[in-house]
Image 1 (spheres, rainbow, N blue to C red):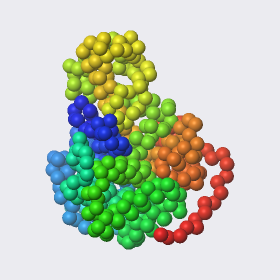
Image 2: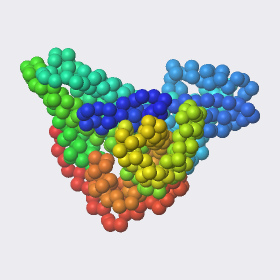
Image 3: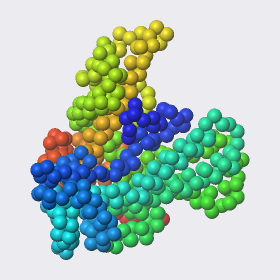
Image 4: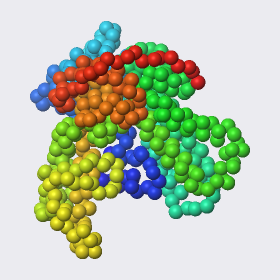
Length: 472
């Protein structure tokens, strides 16, 4: 999610079609980076988080890093990577939290690898952790990036065209549909791992077990467990049925060219909305869901931090324009508040720290300077939303709960959010949200309690959920 001034990603308003997903606001996964310094203690910086460990040696830290990175083909190191978790909660000591995920033999292997490379076991663990996080950014993230690129390519060919579907658009649409169904399969498998198997999915055999299920069986498990609502299940099923019709029926595929282009446009919109619902059940859109629907106090606190980060970025990268922005009499950048509108190019509804009511309401009366500065304010606020999402993402990494659980907790903590509201936002069921509510506050660490304040408490008993359900 780049800064709008530094980059030029498409926004939702840039499309004539009604899409949900753009590169600007969908979490495509960020590969973790690691830095090592040794003055006077060893400091390992993973992204923006600093981890201090015992001094390693007098060797050059970069050489130590280079040596450890060559362990990719080491079978013992790969087993350690496979066993490690996805985040480092603030509630635990890093070393203790990582080692508790390893078997006794794997912990011995950590010490053995450290001795072989004349470094600290803690450093080996942290490098393995980064590898583990990057490994998890696997098929679904790559498929999602390809999906958006494929969709944008088709949209480019459809732009300003009328009439019937050409053979080229026919081929590209079918290829896009195949990619979309593959992405849905990856996302449902991921949701099954996270919600049903959870920590146990790291046991040998579970990945093979989930991958051996048909897509219908995976969806049935998620649906009967309440993770996915019947509405979402049907949306995803419709995409798969369309794919099957076009792939297995040659006559149907060839007759597409007899339809109008608007047929393809409607189908692309439908596919995009279905993918969006699948992302909501896997935690891929956790940052955006929390920003849009989370507790007002929590989001406002994050907005204040995001404004400071945006100011630092603009002061460093766009200093001349930022100086003009700070001196403009119609806005107070330090105290501005606005209605968050992730992914949209349109104007933000600024509700504090501005004097826009003093600007001419008729565009013809506004000076070019006023128009430019007003547009710059909106661009600055879009940068703030980038840093706002980053703030929430950092909490998702530090929380004791996983991404989806932290999202549910935030939505439950929001003012006036009913169980039905939370279920509708996630594309899940009320029973699923109620079950989460029963345990989330109990499983939350001091970190969650600090950043969210009062946590929800179940008021009414939750009846057992009916697990009866047939297979497709």
